[in-house]
Image (cartoon, rainbow, N blue to C red):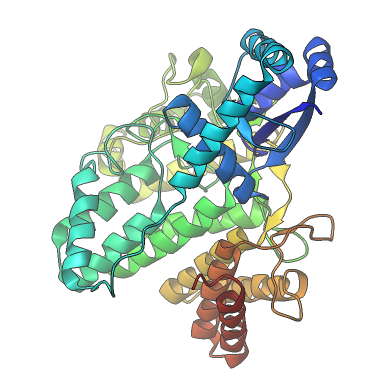
Length: 475
């Protein structure tokens, strides 16, 4: 008959680790929590359904957007009474004592809070059906495209303001809308976003792959966690953008990102792990950032070092904490080449030589932790990334990797009755799949058919679709 503390986060989350170390690992805090509460830790990536309930509660309780770690206080039956996000240790202790006191002295008040939040959560999830059959027309697409284009920052790409998230499916829509309509602004919205992201600190300029989001409006300062689902979708987006524009830089981004995924996230069984942590050695971004002195030491301090620092905006003062630099680009290659009296081709060759030296030096640093759980929906997105890369570039290794991941999903995630599992870790699964697992796996299996013409993939997609209609359809 104790209140519940439901703390929801994910393995790559920086502030989740901060709160874990400051509060949950502190003896005095842990004693108070264990004495008065039942504490439950939830991985939001494994259980998005639980996360959704308590995230909605947090948004209602605080009147604003919430993030992670998400810390909810609930009655013993699980109904939330209040929720918040990160708390420093002193503030967390105050919150704990407040709810201990309230539960002992005024339990009726908590029941009232729970009833109010429950009503609010139920209201958020309510959908009012349209009367009759809504008409889907070209005007519907035009209106949606106009709405997206009004939000675009045409200088720095992405949505206006900060923070900035990649949101690849929005730009895939705009690419297709451009193909349909010929609207040049739709294509410009895509290309300026892809160019600025590729130049920014959100992209790992040495090792490839994208971080989850940028905290500023110019894509320079990321939260450094790297997520499988972002990189899978961004591979698809850059490959499709290359098909439209033939921009060679987009092909390079695809190649480097797939090299990162293979190197850092591929599991021996044939699937892909979920993420790389933002932190290493207890510091956010430590694996990725450099002082100018470190770069000069590795590159020798001569023209090669000066050229690299000019190209990637490296300074003694830095653009991150303690004089460290997040590598990013501002100047065109041609401008840097002129500064050092080189052709653009020779300049790029030398910069790539410097990148390789720094990449090898970085590999000796303690790595960020890998979250080695395998999630069906995210693997399907990565599989689709390989499918789209093969469609664009015809590299046989991409088709083989897509097929290997497809076989992994068949062998480890799919039951004989066409039910899917959500997760795979240490050789076993423990959670039933959600609708996104089914939808994205169906999409990926159709993609495998498109690059192989093996009809067994199409049949599996159909079997899964029929399972979804039987078990998920809302009449």
